[in-house]
Length: 255
Length: 255
DNA sequence: CGGCGTACCGTACACCGTACGGCTCCGGTA
DNA sequence: TACCGGAGCCGTACGGTGTACGGTACGCCG
Image (tube, rainbow over all chains, first blue to last red; front, side, top):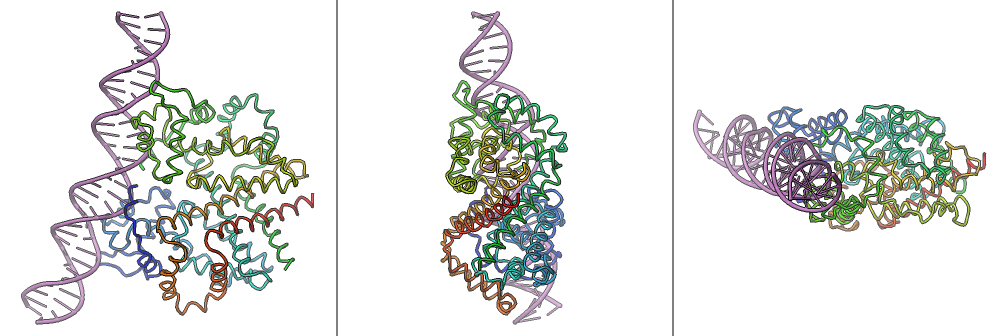
């Protein structure tokens, strides 16, 4: 990771790439689109850390350095992966706004679609979003997701804040779930199995401290019993979304 | 980054490390505590990507491989960094619960303290939290943060969910802010300067599409004018927290 | 004073991103 | 048709990473 020295990512080039056609093949058929797709496929299957220029090139039966003809560097490649993954989020720019059930159903739809994409591509959490925030698909997404909130009496800034609040919740919850799934998969142990070996060990360290942490003990045990880990994420998603939408409802009522 | 093959992180060893004393020096004064502190210092100053075993060792004037006498590997080191950074969050386990103003003030205090830590150590967002979730400081934190919610009529599971909701919001918002600051620092451009060069370019790509994205255009412009980037994060933090607490209030009222 | 456990660390290996320079092939023009 | 410039392709090399392995040297205990 000595990539720090390639200091100048040239925003003009990045933008052109993001908004370009991606499908003009070179003489060996190599395409920006193909490169990005291969990278996404790799990330979906084996995690973002196994998306290396060498791996992507091998997948495409191309020389490693050939990729650099189409893509300035790895940073821009991940930017493209990010934007691309959001390409088919909504069939139509009005799909969220047209959900039956008003703004609340619209935003629930938005949350659910984002949740699904995040679950399908857990590596998204590891890429920094800022630089790709101006890609074509992200722009489309922003418009589609704002529309259910339009015309409710909220100010423009409030609309943006409300959407950001919802999306932050979805991302954060999905991220926790992804991390959980990943560690589970890596250890090869189910949650119960893991606790079976770890619990007693932990008890030894916390012995004597248990009375200092009564609430944590009680609540931790209760949540542990209520959920098997898989459900936990879904519950957190629903619970938080309900509270947030209630809060936004209150704000709308005040307007 | 070929660390995938070190497959067995031995949870027993990790736990012992997390809950151990960290201050038994070897014959050259090397200590777990010292190693972790050096790593944190490095991450604070130059980002997590510059925390390498070689860098940490150099900082301590020790050989690279000497670190492995005290720490099993880099993964465990980052786990320790994570737990350590939350060591001094609260002066007392009742500090949040004792804030004047009831549960709401308590949770605002919790949110603010978390916000401050996240802002002081932006690299936390890049480390996976799950594995250190059982460290001593994290356990203490969990207890302290649950207490303001105890005795309000909420169920145990609801208490956990409400806390998670608040913390997820703080983390997500702080993460966005950190990413924003980072890209700004790396490009060396202020937000205005950046938009001055990028805006016109973007307009060219979006020309003709502007009428397809009326809401995005209007809202994006409004938020852009309202905030200079620095304030944006603070606003998102406050707005979201207010909505969330309103939503939780509603739930409490129903109980 | 021997011996041994453990802290320390030098070297080596496989992997990473990518700078550089050479090769090959295609399209356009003379 | 002949050529030649530029663009696509890619082999090699450099400096970085985490860490396995094996050797050195210190301090403690009998």
